[in-house]
Image (cartoon, rainbow, N blue to C red; front, top):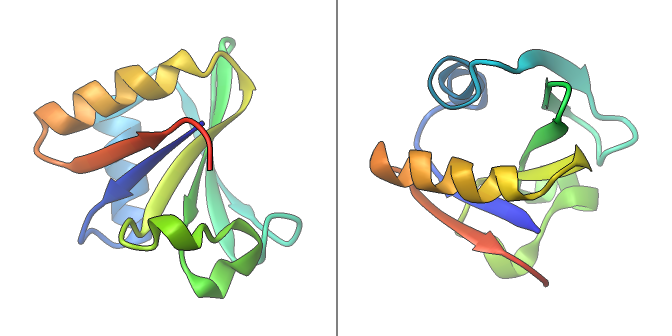
Amino acid sequence: MQLYLKSDLPFEDLAKHMAEKVLPAYKVELRDGLNLGGGEYYKFSSVESTILLVCNDTDHYEVFVESMQDFPYYFYVRAGFKDVLEKMRDTLTAQGFECEIAYEL
């Protein structure tokens, strides 16, 4: 399950927004993504789950999902309960973001 997000915000600004307005109880870290397709990604972690924010583009081919290429970013749960993505979708939609959950690709 992934939560795809359309946003004109730069990657860093989107991560900051997420940390402040969507996942304030989570610790956020900028990580080097050598094992996740290269480039950088953001790791949001709490006792309940670990969520990764990645760029969905051809510069990050190992994590690129071509069928969802209209969405420049996506989140997925690395550990914990995936229902957090549905809560995030509801929050982001209420904030005016266009997002979509893909249950299987």
